[in-house]
Image (cartoon, rainbow, N blue to C red; front, top):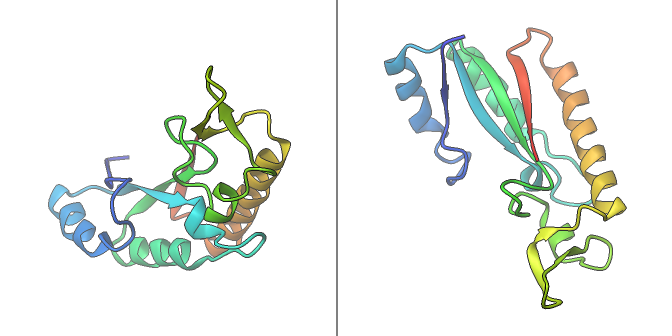
Length: 145
């Protein structure tokens, strides 16, 4: 694998057209790209496969393999990639509490509902990937926690 990583916290996937010329210039055969939970599950239980399918299509057109990053409940301890509907429902998906009793920008690791929602979304993501990628364009999935 000779790979490159897409800047994963930018205005993704709008920046994708700029990626391919760089990939070709670098002459890599693998690109690491993010999949954000908030884009994948905009409403509870309703999955949007457009980003994943678009990544697969474009990677195949450019003859590269993919390593996908799953940004779920946490990334660097924060909830930035959780779906908005979870961020707004602190009763079911509570945050950690600091020493002053204030909620912080991090989901509680003890919230069973958050774990179940993340597991359901990740399972749906992997099932779709299995069905949509019989060519094995994706060679690895890295789970960010």
